[in-house]
Length: 335
Ligand SMILES: NC(=O)C1=CN([C@@H]2O[C@H](COP(=O)(O)OP(=O)(O)OC[C@H]3O[C@@H](n4cnc5c(N)ncnc54)[C@H](OP(=O)(O)O)[C@@H]3O)[C@@H](O)[C@H]2O)C=CC1
Ligand SMILES: CC(=O)N[C@@H](CCC(=O)OP(=O)(O)O)C(=O)O
Image 1 (cartoon, helix red, strand yellow):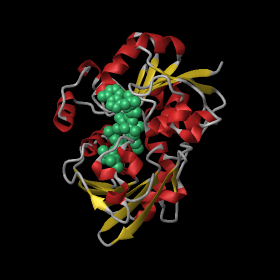
Image 2 (image 1 turned 90 degrees about the horizontal axis):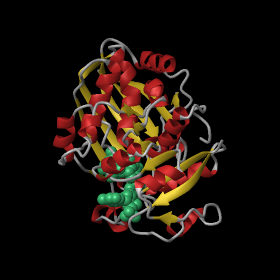
Image 3 (image 1 turned 90 degrees about the vertical axis):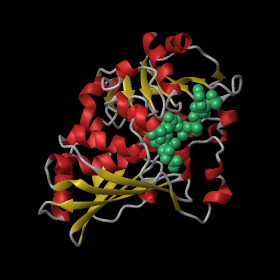
C-alpha cells in the first residue's frame, strides 16, 4: 500500500525538498498540501521546479480533513505555530513528523528560555522522540509524533555523541563552528538573506545566543550520558544549501585515528553516516541524505569536520528517513 503523505506549510523550502524526494520514493506519494497564503494554486505554481512532475493542489484543509487524507503529515511550519498544528493532527489520528524545534528539547524551561515563547503543548516536551534514527530508531518506529532534528544540531550531534559516550574527549571544552547555506533561513524575505547582503560575504550570527546550542548539548547528553558544555557559532555563507561544521575538541589521551575507529564502529550499520579519510565539503553531500565526517590531530586538540545538506539530512531527507522507520520500510527507501 502506498503511504499517503501530506505537507503543512507547503510554500517553504523544506516542503519543496519533501515533494522533490517523494517523487523518487517507491512506497509513498504526496497527496495533500496546505498553506495559509496560496490556497487554490498547485504546488508546482509555487515551486516551479516541480512543473510537470507534481500537480498536488494547495488547499486550506483543517486538521480533521488532512488527517483523513493522509497516513503521515510533514509539519513544515515555524516553531510555535507547529506545535498547535501537530497537536490537532495527532488528536485526529494521523502520525506527524514535526520539522520545527517545538518538541526537540527535553525541558519546557529550556525551550521557553531559548525560544522566548510559551510552549503550546508542554505535556509532550520530553515525551517526544528525537528524529535521529541513528540512535532512536526503536522509539521512532511506534511514534505518533517525531521531532525532526535541527540542521546545525545534526552536524554536531552525530560526530560528538559517540566520543562523549566513550569518554574520549573533554565534555566541557567543545567549540562548534558552523557554516550554512542561505536556504537554512527559510523562503520568506528577510533583510539578512537578500542577495546583496549575502553574496560575496560570510558573516557570523547568533554568537553565544543561537537556539541550536541547547539542542546540541541536550542531545549529546541524552545519547552520550554525560553533560557537556559547548560554544556554538553559526555563519551564513553565500551558497544555496549545505552545512559544514568544524568542531574543536580536546582528547583525553586519544588520537584522530581512534576517533575515526570509534565512528566506524558506531555507524557501521547506519547507511547515511560515513566517516571519510578526505576533508568533507558541502558539495560532497549536496542534495543527498548523507553525512560525511572526518577527524584530524591538531596540536592539543582534535578537529572534527562534518558536512551535511541542511535541506536533506538537515531537514526533509531526515523526515523521509524517519517516515520510513515509522512505517517499517528500510531507512534508505527513496533516499
Ligand atoms: N530550511 C532549513 O534548512 C531547515 C528548516 N527547518 C525547520 O523546518 C520548518 C520549515 O522551514 P522552511 O521550509 O525553511 O521555512 P519557510 O519559511 O521556507 O516556510 C515555512 C512555511 O510555514 C508557513 N508559515 C509561516 N508562518 C506560519 C504561521 N505563523 N502559521 C502557519 N504557517 C506558517 C508558511 O506558509 P504560508 O505562509 O504559505 O502559510 C511557509 O511556507 C521550520 O520550523 C524550520 O525551522 C529545520 C531544519 C532545516
Ligand atoms: C542559515 C539559517 O538561518 N539557519 C537557521 C536554522 C534552520 C533550522 O534548522 O532551524 P530550526 O531549528 O528552527 O528548525 C537559523 O540559524 O535560524
